[in-house]
Amino acid sequence: MSGTIGVMAAADDLGDGRVSATAGPRAPLFAAGIRIGATLFLLAFSAFVGGFLVFADQVVNSREPARPHADGIVALTGGPQRIADAVALLQRGSADRLLISGVYERTSADALADRTPELASLLGCCVDIGYSARNTKGNAREAGEWARQRGYDSLIVVTSAYHMPRSLAEMSRELPRVRLVPFPVQSERLAHWYSDPATFRLLLVEYTKYIVARLT
Image 1: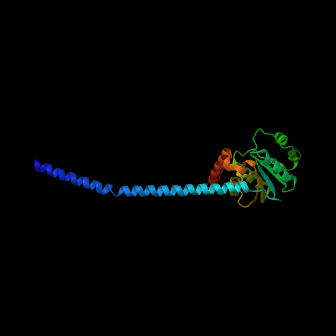
Image 2: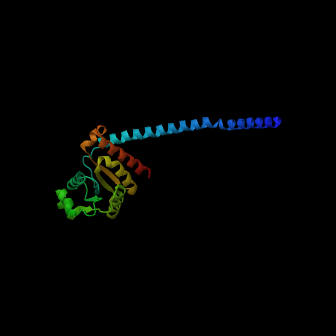
Image 3: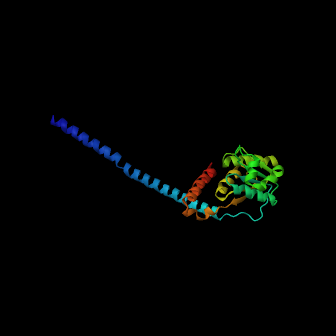
């Protein structure tokens, strides 16, 4: 009986030895995996933060060109100053025609003219209103169809400065052979984005959307 117990005990000892021999190397491998994952995360986070700072600096310091000229002008809705600046460009002869893209379906031409009086005299001759776009990607499609129908090779793009990088990314994909001239509409809020939580959040969200637009 005692011999049997001794054999069983020896077998248990051997079994324990086998478990520890196989489990032992897993701990260093797991720790190495954690370190690699943490390093990759820190690198990705650093790249994101660095890219955001570059993005914010470019947005804040972007300026409208002195004398832009193109076949057409595309104003993306989202702020009254965008349309006003686009109309001013049209009046100065910077292009032959203007597309106001992304207008709400229930907003009439007269309603737009009420908000931007300078638009009223141009509606009958050289302004088109696009109602199909619901987002920036839709703006690009709408502008692409408009430019192709008219045979335009160049467009002045009018939108807010913070929105310009993503707008150009989407339009470049839709119109790869068309020259795009950015006309950023600046806001005083952007100058102190780092101390204004709302503006900081706006830029951060827009930067994230810009990355997605570039990758998809």
